[in-house]
Image 1: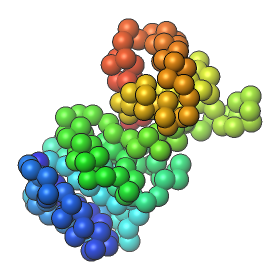
Image 2: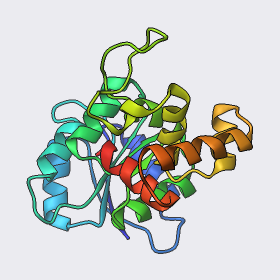
Image 3: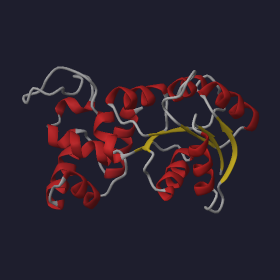
Image 4: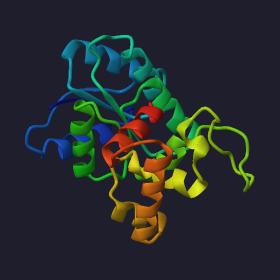
Length: 215
């Protein structure tokens, strides 16, 4: 797996290179300090995947991903950042990011995410998944923003939307229960409701539907 790293901080790039290259089959073939340089490096080296910071001087990570989408053979890109605000998450995914991870993710999580996106998957850190899945719209009964009326989430309760966001990441019922501080049986009931309301026969189909909505 050939990787290009894009980050304006050289120490971050060095650290990521050292961590990633301890994994068999991972080779960091290029680095760049901003999106414009990253675009040139990607065009020159044709990596399998790009890991990019979100906020950089000049062309940032979102701009890089937007530019990459104009290439028919562009590799998937994962945003790796310390920032988790709603606007950034949505902007990255709307631009075409195949993944969004926070920088405190473990090397194993990053490597697994890279393999997943190379295979056509979409990987979202569970800590930002709910933000990613919530399209801005009018307030719900609690006064908080709800989903767009045309989205699959319009028929879901807030609790079901929270569970749906994590199902989309591939999390198990046990992982969802731990993340949302719920009983595993409660999560199972929510997943059953999601399958029924979104007219999906199995969990795989459900996760694919939710992942497509994220993109």
